[in-house]
Image 1 (cartoon, each protein chain N blue to C red):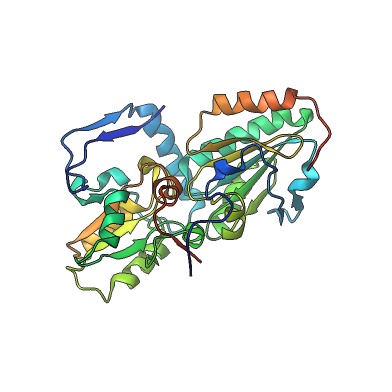
Image 2: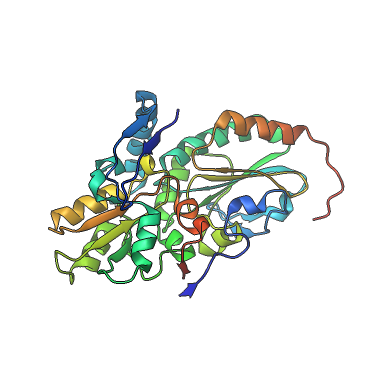
Length: 179
Length: 160
């Protein structure tokens, strides 16, 4: 069972892809995920209504390299960075200047996200990220993005992390903080 | 806040063929778990979390392997990277896994090269060296083959 995403990048590095191909998504993949999600409901009190990462529109995804360029580029309004995954992961490594506001899959995490963005203008550029798991398995970014849209934020992007934050950001040599 | 790369390779793969970092924790049953004390056994060290769907599938499989290969000197240690222990304890109580499960943290994660994605599994040979690293959703057939190979390897004098 495998799930892969192939896409072609636009010149600006955003997900304005010409071609999008999803490989080998099968009921056998979705079945175990569904079963596991069902079992999560038993073991994860306060779990929010699930929303897969695939529910995030392609136009609101940003590649790590594009995000890194944006954060270090001269000029332009820098986005507010919010990590909506694991606090333990955040403590190990996170994008400098980002704030922990998760986990997106849990009610307390959504409450933390709401608290973090409450002072912000609805037009403030914001980037959510997680990187806990392969993209198709992430339980956090989908619900977090959904909540942001429900709250009326209009410039929300989500960093696409194909595998995990370690491989997709840290091991590419992009700046990190820990603590 | 400190800037810069993670310590010790910033990648779990950097531990391959090196001595598995020592650690000791108390598991959910209150038992002392010490990796070094398992020298002489093949150890599967699993970093997991209750929010990780593939992890839950793997944990059930690891329990099967522990039952099947335990008499050959196979041990499993599962380290939960959940932010809080309540969900992990509930999962373990329900699953009856048969191996120690303990809570991890950022310190242990950094010790193992940075646990920044799950699942993450290390196979540690009888001499305490990391023999294989499985990042993300692993091919469990391949993992089991690697495990069986380690179980069949003779014990040599340990330098660790």
